[in-house]
Image (cartoon, rainbow, N blue to C red; front, top):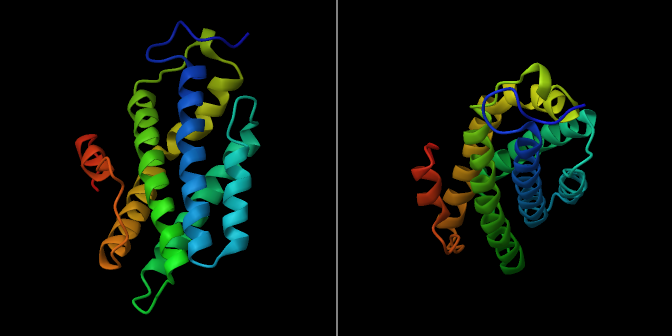
Length: 181
């Protein structure tokens, strides 16, 4: 049991795969940024949860990753709000790598968001993927708001500290996707 079909919108397995790609990328980006900010324990937690975002992840693992993503994003926002924060050159390089990863992860998450808004489970789509999505979809508005706030904080810090922006101008792509970046 479990396949897609019967409902409208993309199959639950496709949506879950998109979610894993976006969430893992954002968690990995958060890990890089947290490392740059000297928050190794939080960085390690984000990285380990990113590694769990793959086919076969349990609903509990998905909920834990979502919690870690929210907490790590808030840590980043708080740390970057400190006007006295100064990073050395190595940390700035790490921050730049995290910024590039965050842009890529945000773009991947946008794909999931757009497809998930059309997800309507049906009797034939009930299965592990659909159940996992049932836990994820209601959190999309709050998760998106948090992602946007983190992206804005990283982008502003990068601009103020002459850390290069992602080369493919992800910010304009994210704005074009409808996010308030």
